[in-house]
Length: 133
Image 1 (cartoon, rainbow, N blue to C red):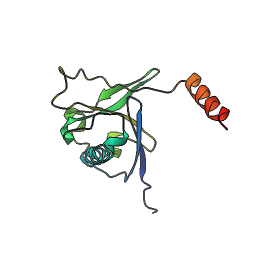
Image 2: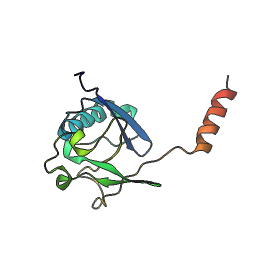
Image 3: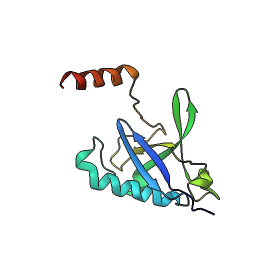
Image 4: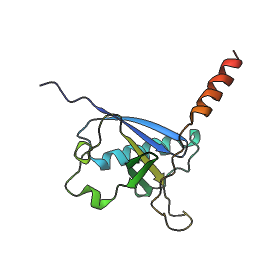
């Protein structure tokens, strides 16, 4: 039997998109730790406040497709489902993440802010890039 190929996980927050390549058997805790390390080492290059701890990262699973909304992935979601595949995460799955540090003003409402490029933006960006050539 051939080995299971790794999963490409897309993580989105605000206008930031990150891609991680992880084995399908990866525990969710490893995904969160990897995301934390990626955000803290790349923070000067990202338009996000870096997380202060692994626990300040909140992950969201897709809930609805039109419009795309996410439901928080919390402890109750994890019962008996420690790995990405057991959570139903497949290759190409988009997960939302939010950085909620201790200095966050107020209590986090469970909403994920994800900005999607519209067709108009894509066309105007490709037109403006093409005009400079």
